[in-house]
Length: 127
Image (cartoon, rainbow, N blue to C red):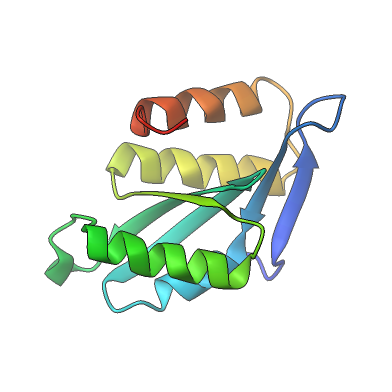
């Protein structure tokens, strides 16, 4: 993982939306007993968290664990209002890929659109 705390990239010409890789937040989440690894991308006041859980957690993100993760995110970044968490393997892989693209400075070729479609699919009830 990068030593950089977060990487900001504008994804449109009007600076309306930013995607940030929040490595510091991800590191704090990975310190939780139930979590093996975490990837966190922040956009505006939302944090999207992809976690790989340790075996004893049976791969399921319980409401209790979501609250623990949310507390870690909000303790690290006071501007975050909504925290969305998933351990879905496809989401985990996509989040890692998005994080790599953001860190490489690749904000073109539909990155924001791809990211938006992914989070709408994984979190359909969140607006």
